[in-house]
Length: 134
Image (cartoon, rainbow, N blue to C red; front, side, top):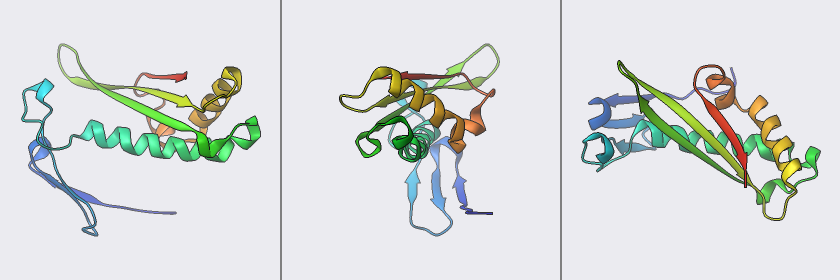
């Protein structure tokens, strides 16, 4: 095992989430779009933050192989909560931008990063994920 963290939430989407070490505690709230107050954070936001950061690390590790400037990379992760007739599900869209970079090289890099990022591995074949370059 390389690393473990633990969080506890009381009150679900309108509660409070706290890391075990106490270094981060967040008020959670249902988004206004879903009828909530929007006066806190929601799981989709936290997932987008985590995935964009993790994916950015994968980009940093692989950028040199593609002849690209990894530290200049910006990764955006959009997470969508979707509803069908019976339940909710997630969709995600990852965008990679490096100013002045060749689009074909960017495309190859985003596809490679998607193969090694732990969040991408965890969601593979579980939720729809699209990749794009800017």
